[in-house]
Length: 377
Image 1 (cartoon, helix red, strand yellow):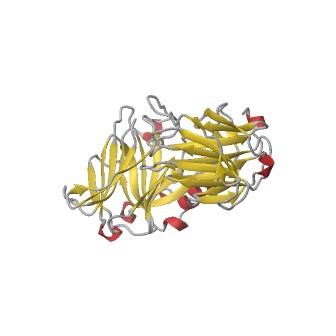
Image 2: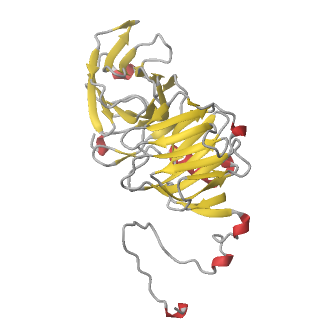
């Protein structure tokens, strides 16, 4: 039909739209890239500000038919990211993304990323015809029926995976990246686009991800209010010991967001009177996998009477967030939106100056909450 007759736009069905609008002079706009340049401009809106981030994806693959196996031009090297934008079908069971050394069925897999819904995300490598030691992490970043954006960043250490702007996991190199040439995708996922981002650390995406990580202190509490975390410490090396910068007084809290390691035995969070190993520990929170959570005090170089709480909120390979509030009569612990336990003061909280974290855990953010009272806690 003649385009002059078209006057109206209609949209219906199973879709949610954040925005629609019009781009005049399409061929001269920044969105138009000739096919031969093998680049596309993608807009990413999952960032703290309301301004979308535009970035270029080279060698884009639009709506690949699955299962997909294809060469990555030039292979991969450090400081390159592989970008995926797609959605998980409502009835999904699992999907798999493989970084392969070739296109044959028996070729090695340097990194397999395999979310299995209702279970875990499984991480592994396949070499010389055999699967190697499997690692796991939580499947929480992905929700059935919802869209996602994912970056797999190649670093000197391994494959860093970011989902919807937040660093989710790291898989250390087992096969040299120089041998990786091919990308494979299969399973219950639909992708609108995937491709490469060169010079990740200088890209607009990297900046947006870092900003989002630094403001990850906005979390949803039991009352569904937003909590601002001040002075966040991102990805602290474990073991960690540091001063509590906001000081310790009634109704302040620490916020810890992290993941229990796949083969974890236990981890510890300590409220200490100083930075050294021999200083008193006013409150020792110690989840022991497969058993219980131990609560105790260490004073004058001796452990006191141990108390316990169930292990329920903590699973090997699963992510969590903890808020530990200092009250007039003790420490209140909230885990993943639920009140978990209370430990009465044995050492005056005014003597507490430091927090320590040890054991089988990785921490993405450690931060501090200056006043819980307005938030309903």
